[in-house]
Image (cartoon, rainbow, N blue to C red; front, side, top):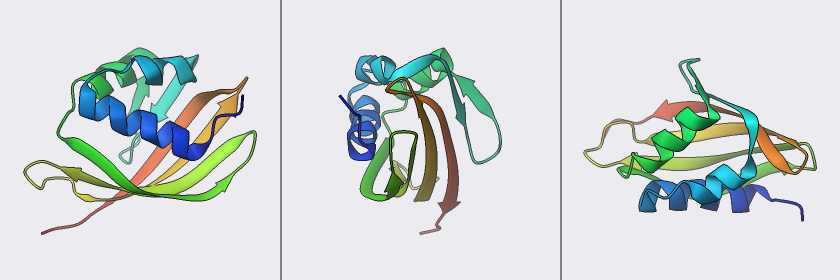
Length: 112
């Protein structure tokens, strides 16, 4: 089964909302690497910990710009309770063996 960008984004969104990172864990390779806007990196375990302990982060407005068997590219909005860090996130992901091996984001924050 081929995993789509929307499916992956829904898993991230639902993981943040529920605190259950298990579905996200199933789609990440063991050597997964997350790279944030500031260049900081997270391993698979660090990423799963982040997803399971950050309920104030809400993802929505998914837009897929490009996807194939190897990559996913798109954007989504992000809102944090308290208004800090709201904005738009552009993402690039690399797939290997039907799982996500790399996820890079660039966030543009808004002030409200």
